[in-house]
Each structure stands twice: as structure tokens, then as C-alpha cells.
Image (tube, rainbow, N blue to C red; front, top):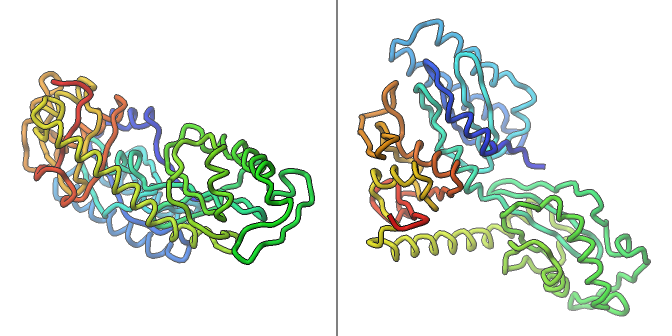
Length: 372
């Protein structure tokens, strides 16, 4: 299985409200393989040193630094955490508390120390993890696999049949034609529909409420049959063709990668085209004062953000106006972070993009639910 700890909206709301003399927010890319544990721990300790150095530079009380250092070091010493990572690790600490989240999204190393947590990367992980599912399906085996851009693992699904014979309670022939098509009574479409319905019912509890793409890895005669009976509405159009029986979860992840990249590229393009078409109508802008006001009112539908850039200052919660500052501190924070939090807590979505993929030169752009 993949190890992830993406917080719920309720937990995000609690994180938003945390205030302390110093809050340390640490993000680092990690590896979902046990052979890289030492490398990941060293990377984390280096970022902890950066956080402590920032506080010493700000002349923070020594007792506060010592208490925060103890909380952060406790994570480094957690032997149950490091062998079970995902693609990134988020650690949020105050002098008397610490939380760690394993995220299925590759983030750049980052440290921020302020009077509140820096949550924009965490929100990005919640909104755009790159996660997906793969259903490896043949008449001789069935596997449901959870994957990200760098890792994959089989999910244990109760009541998922081992093969078509176990599903239907019949000993069916397993002969194959040279072209990969089955022969004889096993080719009866009705039997395969029954088989696929049983599989769909088994994996439904796992997928209920999820929106991640499901990629089918199946022999050509099964993919359209499964698609026709499936209750899941996010099945990718493209298929990993051929028998998946001898392919590992990592093999299947690699074959699914171009399908997932195509889906994401198409989704991003549609959002950016929508943004461009709405400019000048009062339903889209890159003006942070307007975005801030809309976020406060719960009107942001989609917020596109460049994770590598920030706008520091204060967001006036009455007017939405932004007062700018040179960097984070006790009287300033990343305004994009604040707006992103408001957007997610009120049902909007975050789309993290590279600078070159942003539809504007500015680090944030929004599409609104209604005309302002």
C-alpha cells in the first residue's frame, strides 16, 4: 500500500487557526522505498537546522527554540515513520506540538518559520496529488493498484475475486487464441459481464467518493465490457492493452504514466482556456486584492498558483486588500497561502502549476463562481 496522510478539510481548518510564538513548516521530497531511509532522514535534519537557524537569527527566546527543536527531533527519531513514506513529507511544529503528513506529490525542499503554519504546499497535495488507480484485469487475475507519479502498490480489496472461475463458481477453460482472444464458452459475453459486475461491486467501497482517474490494464476484449458495467465515472479513455498478469505494480505505473500525463495536460488546458475566455467579464482575474475579497466571500471556484512564488503581507479580512511586506514574520505571511486556505475550506479547488504553465505573469490567478 501507499502511505499517505492528507488532512481532511476539518483538520485543515484546525491547522489554519494555529498561532504560536514560532511555527515551523518543513517540506521535503522523500522516497517510497526503504533503501532511501537514511538519505531522507539526513535531508530532514538539514531542514531542521535551517529552521533553528532562522529562529536564532530572529533572536527568538532560547527556551522556545529548545522546545521546538525537541518536537522536530522527535520526528527524526520516529522509526515507524521513515520506512513508510510517500513522495514528500510535511512536518508542522510548534514548541508544544508536531504533526507529520506523508504526501503523494513531489514538493521542493522548503522551510518557513512564522507565527502560523505555511500550508500552500499541503493544500496543493490535497487538491492535485497526481494519484490514480489501475485495475489490472484478465480472466486469470484481478488487482486494484493505487499509484502516484513515483510509486505504486496493490490494494487489498475484500471480496475481490481471484479470477473468473472463483468469481462465477465455475471451472472455466483458460485456453487462449494466438491473437490473445479467448476461445470457447469462456468467450461468452454474458459471463464476462457477470465477472466485471462482481469486480465492480468489490472495488466500489474503495472508490466511493474518489475522483482520481482509474486506468484499465486489460486484454482487449475485457476493457470495453468492464467500462460498460462500471459504476465509477472517472475511467480513463486510454487503456494499457494486453495481459497485465506478469506486470508488477511499478511496471503498470510506468505504463499508466503517459495516460495520466495526458489527462492532467488536458484538464489544465481546459482550465486555462476557461480562464482566458472569462477575462474582462468579472469572473476571472490575477489581481490579488480582488482574489482576496472573492476568497473571503467564498466565490473562488478555481485558484491557480505557482508554488515556488509567494506574496508576503497581510490580507484585510474585511476588504480583501493586501498590505505587502518583504517576507514572512509575526506581522506578515504568504497571502497566496491564506487565499488558498480560504478557497479550499469553502469548496473551491487549487491547481498548482509551474511558472511557465501559469496563464499570467503573476503567481496566482482565479476563476470565480459568479461575476463580481
